[in-house]
Length: 199
Image 1 (cartoon, one colour):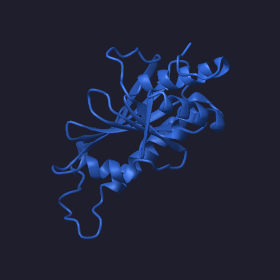
Image 2: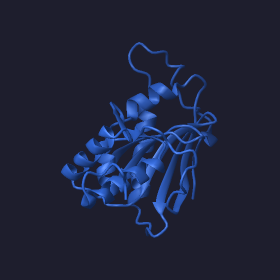
Image 3: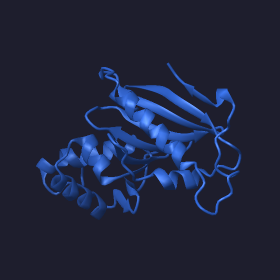
């Protein structure tokens, strides 16, 4: 039982919050936590306030994270990760700018969860409404990468693929230069192999 819970019956949610954040280095939005834990908003608020008060969780403008991550990460729940698409980016594309244009936003059935920061680099993460799947977006080796994550027990229903396709479209739109920007800064490589869908 957790040492930070004020009452024994509240300990399970506190423990679930901590376990969820341990598996996801970075920051998670309140609604992302609520959906992932299937928690009542008021119960989650009380739990997060307790955890903050006891110095376990830190709340910032971009979500919640653990104050001190454990030295050894717990293995995450079994999941199937599938690369969905990769787009080769032109040199000079700013990850910070692209992430700033997409982070915190909802796109159709995609509900913002947060920014995960594992050792291979940051990912923006959304859950798919009505599904247990998640869609991640990151930049790896000069490529915009979209990945689908599904729990092993989830039966593919096409909903996650449609959501990933929608996210890819919004990401490509976000690469378009805004007024006053050089068109060389945010451009997608035009050669045919730059966009590939994984089967």
